[in-house]
Length: 118
Image 1 (cartoon, rainbow, N blue to C red):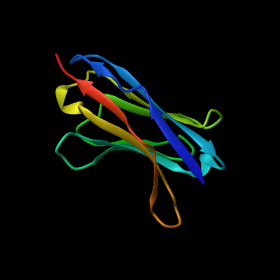
Image 2: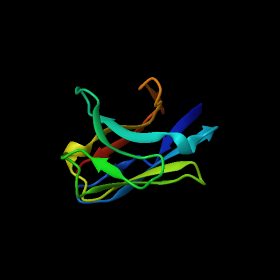
Image 3: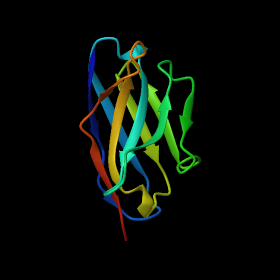
């Protein structure tokens, strides 16, 4: 099983870019599909997107498609979320999660906060 730690969140202005990192420790990181979620203040957690264990395919929520990109480096046990043209609606706590294929449940990180405000 892996443990996940997110980093890179901070306050930025609309239109700025940001890169979040999700670093794993533990065994077999390369077998997990990894997802990014976010939760805005007062709202439910929503999916941002995810990437296959191989890194060969990623999918995104419509709200971020064309602006966000997910990549991974299995040698570094890291998944990245590149966020461009940030908007105030992108404000929230961002979490990465590794999906356990057998159960369908997730291993969660502790989250990192992103604030987009002028």
